[in-house]
Structures are given as C-alpha cells and as structure tokens.
Length: 116
Image (tube, rainbow, N blue to C red; front, side, top):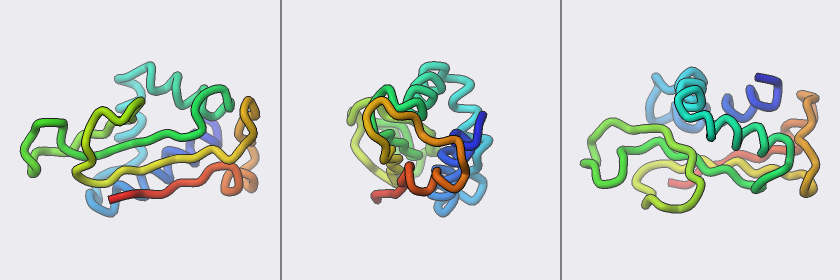
C-alpha cells in the first residue's frame, strides 16, 4: 500500500470514526482483503483509469433494522438508500493521469467529504 492508498483509506477512516470510534484503517483493509474487486477498483482509481469518484458507506445492510451493526461497503452504483453517512473520494486529475505518489500533492489531487 503506497502513500496514495494510505491517504485515501486514512481519510475515509477519519470520516467514519466520528460515529464509531472503533472504526479505523484496519476495517477498510479487512474489507478490501475480503473483496478483491474493491482492491482492484481502488488501484485503478489511483492510476486514473476508472471513475473519478468513489463512494463508501458504513451503515446497516439494506433491509436491516436501523440499529443493526453497520457494515462498510464501497458502492459501484447507487443501489442502496443512504441511512447513515456516505463518504465520497474525488480524484482531481485529468482522465488517465495517475494520482501523484508525493505526499504534498495528494491533498491537491484527492478530495474527500461526506454526506449524511
């Protein structure tokens, strides 16, 4: 995991740990390890070869009670209604241009925010 991946996963964890203090980068790493296509999508995102936006949720699964345990999910479409927080990651690079591996450039090339 290079500086780009650490920056993205760290920022996602920053947003979700507000609601769940136990949420950390390890939870994202476990999710990626259990879902190889997510890891591939993340790498392609950082290379600049797929969508400019990634969307992540940490909420009870679709159809579960509102107080059910939250599960992390990277959405590839908007197949689930938002019930808690959504974190978006936007790549600010030209199509086909990879995100820089330099720490100083990451803040300029990747924007992260949330919607509740």
